[in-house]
Image 1 (tube, helix red, strand yellow):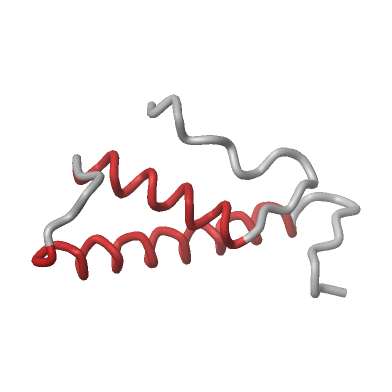
Image 2 (image 1 turned 90 degrees about the vertical axis):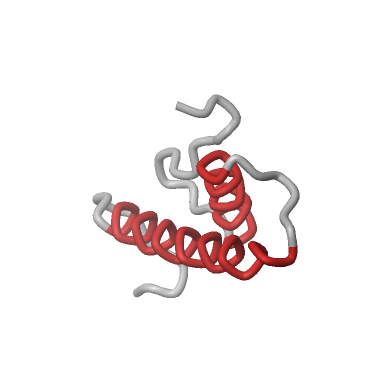
Length: 76
């Protein structure tokens, strides 16, 4: 487990898109082994960050929405 990746969901606290994207970036860097990219790999790297951030946000919303008494922003 990567020690530098922080927990995004802690109780009822809702994290923002920036935090989710930052975690996705850390994850992709760890998996790929790259911190700095060549132009040839940049598109694939950025696409992976986008996909992981998107999936992570869906997971966080689904899990948080299931907590009793929790009201998600924008959800009545």
